[in-house]
Image (tube, rainbow, N blue to C red; front, top):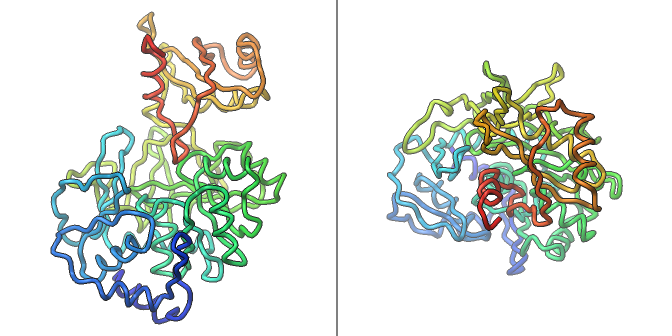
Length: 419
């Protein structure tokens, strides 16, 4: 199926630009890309593991599709795993840590890979006359679904930036009259701070981590560019997209369901996703949370009458305070409304009274502010039992390259004697 879809794309766009790799300053038309991929011999390996962010990655994907060999994209530093060979109809394996932090694989068929690409292109209205600028990892689920499959299945050209550095992004953007730029919040923040968001961005997309409301507001107010929040998961592809051209009502809003996706909640308020793009199962061991066409997420959500999805936290992150549970995001969002607070992370901590957990917060500031003032500020917005008992001021409150941070890692760091 994927090979046939690719051949149809080549027939339609044969002489049009497919890829411009800025680092090598080389370009490929769709016809040239097809010829290069067809020149690769069939591999004796039972699974192909494309790596990197260049043409070799793309050609390996096409080689796998042509020979019907299962595909498992890897990051450059990721060792080739020892895994069983997936049986048909499994065509693709995604690496994911899930909610537990334990590495495992998500198995997808060709039709599920294609469905995710179709839903993304349809929902976001991607167009061949508006190339994607690639700064994301092609191996990551977000990069693969937003850059690789739209290229091969829909003819959306790809400009591979030399890096995500501001100068490299600006250089890549100059290669087309208008561009689509998918990125993570940490990159959008860096580009905004360095005045490096290209002026010809037609569609700005942010996924991989929560998009800060203040960042979205500042970019919109100062540059007139709306960053569209995108929520997805390795297990099911795209979930929700903020189609609006105005500021989201609040930080918990993530948009409405992708075209072709049905959202609901279970009895506990956790998100359930149903769509043709939901993966077949976990691999090599299945689990009840993922059973095509349904993925049961651990995200606690609410869905408005108009379909607007709000993330309320994760079931695994809920803090149990003497039998009462609160999502850390509830406290974080309240604290972030204080003008002196730049960033914060709320954690559940072991309670000395053995009543469950107590609440702690690590935070960073824009300007000095007494802890007592912050406590008083939160008292006006939250019930007393939700107020943090322990506070840590840390200017090093950062995120990883995808804009995420681990509550578990911060908990260990703060509670060790050397912290």
